[in-house]
Length: 582
Image (tube, rainbow, N blue to C red; front, side):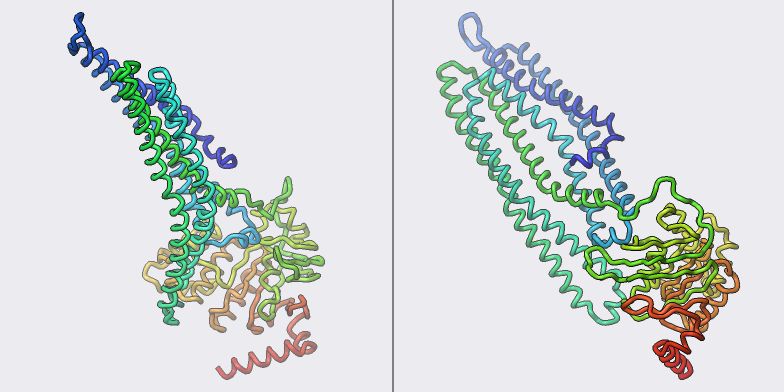
């Protein structure tokens, strides 16, 4: 918990109140048995001058009243502790969720690759909730139970020292039992959370791909997959519970042993008149409080065991070191859209093989760059390095004449915008989605961007136009419409470099040509980098890059490549022939 204590800092005042309230609550709880002892010995069992038992009503009412007042005060402060503890735990949970979410925003793509999305969701939600529940219990019980335990034992020792010896038998049994439960159960809880991650992954994949599932009639398969993931969680949870269930029987055994010993020793002491009835009743109450406090402590230990796994998983998120760092006093202005790759190589973390090897490129600002290659040749990786979503393994990349590592990430990514093939839209209106590119964009600017992206016509045909609601992921628009909206979102930002990573694949060739023509005519100063499997989409590019598994295999304009590169010529002719047939 050390790393997480800082998230309590804004709650210092409330954290100071809790122990004060607990001390007052426990003190008045401790007084109740004392008053009860006095009520029995000096009130109910009061004797006159002749040794006859004559109850003293004044004493009975006085101590009875003190017991009622003490109970009310203990109740009031108990409520205050619960209220403040719940507030602290809830705000702590909110701070922790916020910290995790903010930390994830600093991750590079490579950091995100270390976690499953479903696992991150589980950590922010379920793991944090588990920790909030534990914190709430700790704030209420972890202070109260030990204080009640200590004060009760101290009082028992004063009134009936021999009966306190009973605890020397019971407490060690409980401590050994709790230790066994904690150490054995923890590993199963760790495994359980891992399996919950997998269950959430199954749910996430199924819901995101529900249309594909239904298209291929795979509902039964998905149900079986979910049942298996749920059964895995159930099995490991049962294994953990098989250990945890010993907690209550252990406490019941300790309580039973205690009362047998107390009854036996206490009755003998009463007969020998070394213990009064009031002191005996007093002692039983305190023994109850000791055992109750031990039960509460055992519940805290149990919550610690369960939440320990959550703490470790949350710390993994918070302690993950972002692989992309900024230099001190970074450059905030990108001069132009020129870029250069200087002997760049890259491999993913944990991989032995470079995805890109010795890449050298020099592109002037305002150029139209086309990239073509088969799947797995590193096309997307190349442009992701340009936007510094990953850092190079070797070599350097320059944008606007400066090493991209010298820029602040915010300023670089505002000027180097990447539109992915599967770029998503967020739940909200079309206007709100386009304003991701420029938050203060006017309707006129949005309409201009929509026209450039060839999205204006279909948007205007909708009933609410810019106020048309987009469902999560853009599932209520077609693939081509979604791609055009994401292009408009990028264009409204007016970056120095615009990268389209196969982001017109769902658009017909006629619309694709219009988008390219619009980009060329209306954004001449912007550097356009287009990855496409259609050579017709990039044939007018200033530079066409052909990539294979060894990196860049050819470079040049369309005429040069068509004349000198057999692979390019073959693919181009085949695609054109297919186009003519259509």
